[in-house]
Amino acid sequence: MAVQALTGYFTIGVLILVGVVLAHFGVLSSSHQRMMSKVALLVSSPALMFMLMSKADLTRVFAGSALVSILAIATAVVLYLVVALPVFKPDPAGRTVGMLLSSYSNAGNLGLPVAAYALGDPTWIAPILIAQLGVMQPLALAHFDAVRARESGGPVPVRSLLTLPFRNPLTVGTLAGLAVNMAGLTVPELIALPTTMLGNVAVPTMLLAFGISLRLDPRPTRGPDSAETGLIVAIKTVLQPLAALLLARYAFHLPHEAVRAVTIVAALPSAQNIYVISMRYGVRELFARDTIFTATAVSALVILALVTLL
Image (cartoon, rainbow, N blue to C red):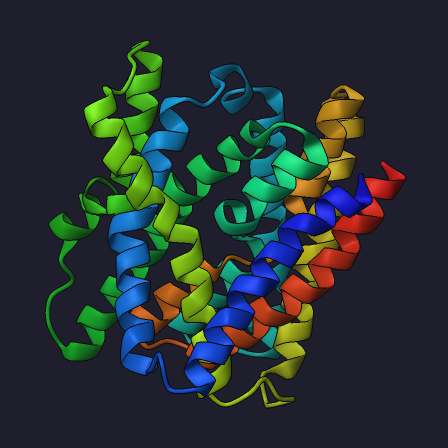
């Protein structure tokens, strides 16, 4: 079982390494990296989420384990704010990046293969995907847009911010797939085939862009934000899964299979999506990249330990 869980990490590592190698030999550049990130965020990921949610197990999506996962996310956010606000004093936009890194799991790129190999059922990841793409990410993007408006001296686009969740391609894809599922419909093959092809591009495109960044941007170092990185990695890979374990076992009395699933899912590292978002808004890009890199390495060890112990 532990060897199967490692497969997901090995696959991701290979794709990131391909990005590093292609950037090293000049095949791909920083401009390619930004283009690939936009394609992944605005086109491929929505297609992936639509197809995934159109076939997800709804009893799993709306089960008690979903509430445990959401509460564990909230716990991670609170822990970050309690320490970061008085100690590191990040600005509003930087604070949002830190909150995302502390709680927003790599549910798509890494969560799906880990759920498939370590848990035997990829639908365990569906509640996290809905919470993150339907609530957390739209709220974060709305905050970034509001901060940008204030800094430029323009009015905060309230109407635009209120409708943002319904204009975000990722959210639209997720909700559309969920609507198809709840209606008991089957996606016609003429739509399913091209949409699936587009969705299949999402994960490798994001990982290649991440690899390009590792090669062309300054390498991860012990900079002024290294202490904050350590805090976030500890919260994301240790304290969030611990909160999920305690809530699932002692507060909600979930069956062992669900306890194991929510704990392992909570131990997933920070998502590459956060790096894409930080790059889009120009907020703490290298900090996000370095934290994701460190969290992914630590998470691999934590998840292997959890798979063995649970």
